[in-house]
Each structure stands twice: as C-alpha cells, then as structure tokens.
Length: 72
View (tube, rainbow, N blue to C red):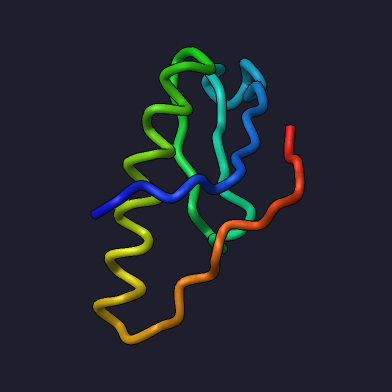
C-alpha cells in the first residue's frame, strides 16, 4: 500500500497522563498514536494511518483524501 500524506498534529502529553507526545491525523476520525518523543509519535501515527485505512476498507467505509490544510 502506498503511503498517503495525511497532515498530523503532535502535542505534548501532561506528566500526569504519563508524558510523551500524542500524534493525531485529523482527517481520519479517531486515528491517533503516541510516543516518548515527537519523532516516535510521528513514526507510530504513520503505522496507525495505514491500519486505519485498511480497517475502513475492510468495513466498506470511504477513506477520506488527505486535506491540503496545514496542521501543526
């Protein structure tokens, strides 16, 4: 499967919640992952995006195209 370039958001998690970083793909509802570093969170969200797309297709759901908006 080719990787599609979905915008992602990375934000720090509070220490009370274990710390680290949360990465989300706003174009794909519920698609998120985390990591100890921002780089790890980005690598993990790439895997989560692929899994999200595969699950949506298996269920016969439409897969949204990546948006063109800039997300930070």
